[in-house]
Length: 304
Image 1 (cartoon, rainbow, N blue to C red):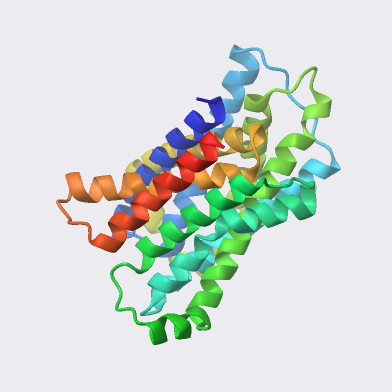
Image 2: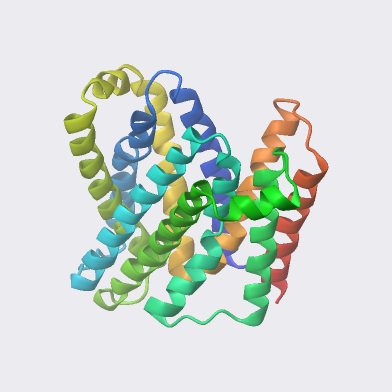
């Protein structure tokens, strides 16, 4: 099995752990604070990984250029926007439909990859993307009351639009991160996916931390006290989150973002495994079909 596949599966597992811990933090702080923890407390670990690669493992530091800064800034801001829209969906009663549309990220990443990088997806890849996206969307709406009429209506709802826009920003951020990381390669003696990914992660997470700190200080200053009071679990979230992001960045340096995002859908399988084995929550038929479609999509991608 290729290296990027193993890295992606590991990153998906870590992201599932991080998400579960962030839900716990929402009990002691607001949504903005729980979102900030992902970046602010992950920053020290992102810099630690970069330092270890540079000073301990002896990997040379890349020299950033204008192309790197452009794509890194676009990716960092797009990810913040995507996360904000996804969190905003929870204020709607039928947020499940919007969440499903946000999961069109792999398909949109494929489109952005074609537009900005000229990366063409093969027919097999497009089939795998379609299968996995349908699987995730089935899971997202599995516990809602659906009928042909409600399904058609939901497609044109405000919730669906917000979800689709969230998926757009997630897809844009993924392609931007790949573009930024690849832009560092010419400044190195030889391509070094670990250093390229680590350097990109360090810059992006620093940018996101500064932007979110400014936002919180200006709009929700009381949130800073709640974040400080929960620094111990927040530090763990930061470690897991930074580790997951390092995995994503490495995988997307090695492989097209759209393809990585298809395999990344296995995060849903980890989520259901946790629900079933830890919380003893039963899975209904639609959710089971969705899980099987995700597996089929990933297997199709790897075999073709």
